[in-house]
Image 1 (cartoon, rainbow, N blue to C red):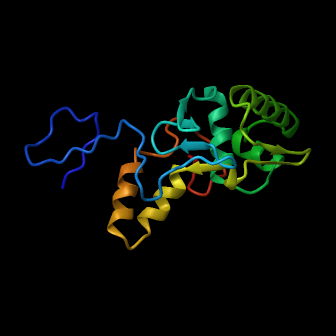
Image 2 (cartoon, rainbow, N blue to C red):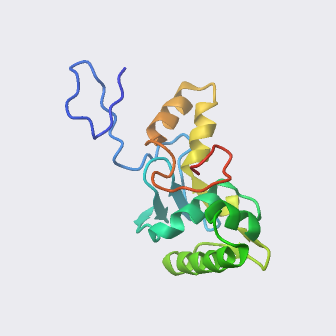
Image 3 (cartoon, helix red, strand yellow):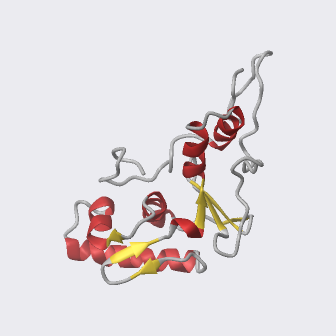
Length: 174
């Protein structure tokens, strides 16, 4: 079977086309919003998000690396750690000021996002959102063919295209 993205010009006659333009809500590992988890984030390929299964505008571009860092690290992150990932060339004081501004912008763009912050840490709880990267990892490591197919449906390209930061586990991209 040959998998093609919608960007493919012409499909060979034997190719099977899987339309990857629409969100992949399948019964296996599908996102079903709850009162505790109304957000769905798609980081594979271009960043997309849904709130109560309704597509939402992306937050400002400059906040997307911060959002990706919070989504991919579902534990309290120290502000110094985020500053060193997002602004490695700035003095810490300037980096902390920029981080505070990005948090403000993110809260303006996504007022219902359950960010937990204090003077030292920032957290976006894993229980408060569904994340395609986690569903992909779960499906790709499963022994079930259906789970593998679901993982293929979720895959849309490199994670967080266009977002960059240092200090991530896989190098320069979140």
